[in-house]
Image (cartoon, rainbow, N blue to C red; front, side):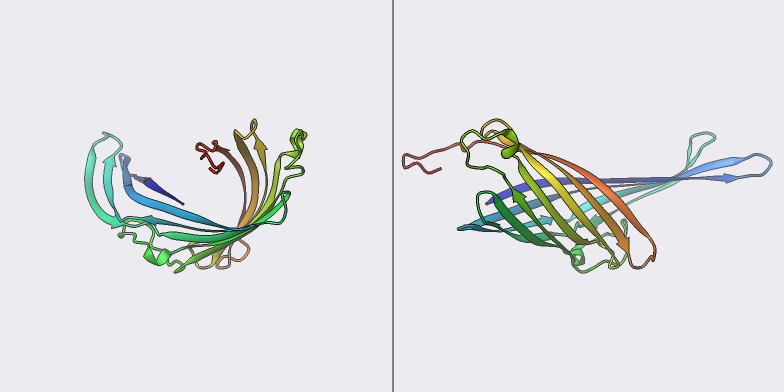
Length: 239
């Protein structure tokens, strides 16, 4: 079981330059800046049931205050012509996920999860995008892991690597858009029980049924580190 505190920040700036041509060209710049920060909580629990493990996690963000500043500036003399400011309350949508893994043998393990982002709890305050969204954007993922020789006393290094593969399907906030991705990765052991360095490649495609013929491909390189030692041992030999 674990609980984490999160602090998130968001900033967006946009500028447009206008030109009025007459006897003397006059240029102006219209700039808008939005800043937002919020507090959040993430919690999760894993329940071991023999070879089966079931987990549940959730993430919730508290409402935060967004500030906006808009100004029209004269580029010729760098002076401000007019400006406005305002504020509104914004809330990031919460999310939750449930997953399970099963250890078929010391060499083979499989896992899957289902998650959702609850966009019906999103509040833009009129300052951020208010495009119609799904009430809940669902995602599904599944994958497997193979370790060639997990129990040998003196294995070769390649026999201790955690080889992984999986896929995921995700609905995006817009009702007509989604993405699909395939992932190949490996967990590289560091020392003896000192941790693992994770590296993975994710290749995917986003599409939107509202725009026939439109799609985009993406490639993600994922790096991570899992570390730590069991830090306490009782007299009975349990941690």
